Length: 391
Ligand SMILES: *Cc1c(COP(=O)(O)O)cnc(C)c1O
Image 1 (cartoon, rainbow, N blue to C red):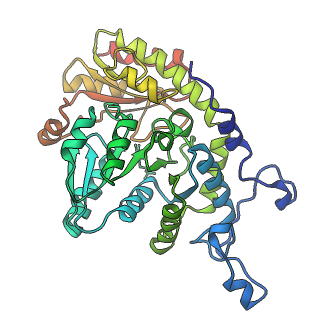
Image 2 (image 1 turned 90 degrees about the vertical axis):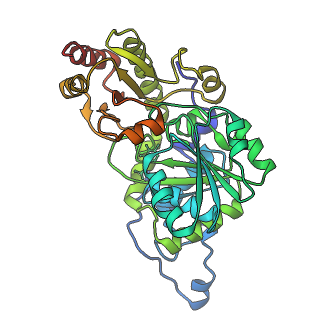
């Protein structure tokens, strides 16, 4: 079983940032569905301070959005959180806040695909940014990749296809020595299973589209840091780019947070049972799940994480046709790309990858990623069993 969330985390998810006295003692905060706030006097208008929870225009800040940001900042032990219209908007905002034309970035090879597209297809081409991709299993790889113009290290740990783990304290220490800013996509662990800022990482990002929302009904992202000055810069930058989260999505994310701990406990418990079943199945060559003692970085994961989520991958022992047979015959696992919701999902992730992509990641076309939702281990194992039997 996963350790429970910290006492303070439980309060952050339930009460922090909320003040029912301000809204007629309603136990859930209202959705402030408004684009602007109005003022009595000229002086009032010009004295607004958005950093002190004062409001004038919805692109800069909104009271429902602020409640969510307070909870997320508390959960990640940051000074401030800034939420965006998508995880990718948060990621892009972090890179743009840290880097300049000509910057060098070190990025793990298994980072989320669209992040690599943003780097390779856009930032490298238009702003002469350069990127070194590293596997990231040792601190030395990062050290060897550092150049005088290195400004940022982009991490994801565990990563979300083959679940590589990065030594966060080690990389943070190295980066500090060289004045490099570290960034991590912490979506896999959620704020309750891993606290990268406490390990020295500078910026944490989550896509709230996954477990924070938790119900597959919103798109959103967040950046959190201990550096208040940096976060103020990010908040102002969000106003310029316009990628703020809408009040309705903020409200849904607040609702998602209330049950994050109980959902994560169940996702973890279910995924452990499913992973053990799959590991013992003759048609499965390999299970990629950091909760299994067979994972090559199991010890490091135990040191850094309090738990695991419902996401894993398997390598099927079979032909491409077998991959299709397996995935198409799953009944409870819907076929889809995302994860982190109540529902189980399967995707033949590498099925149509080019030879170049396969070589870059050192993978075969037989990798299927599974998200274990909240349907319970017995139901999911039965479903997997019948689909594997059809191969
Ligand atoms: C989905 C995902 C993202 C992107 O989030 P959006 O909210 O869809 O922009 C980033 N990182 C990881 C690991 C993801 O799974």
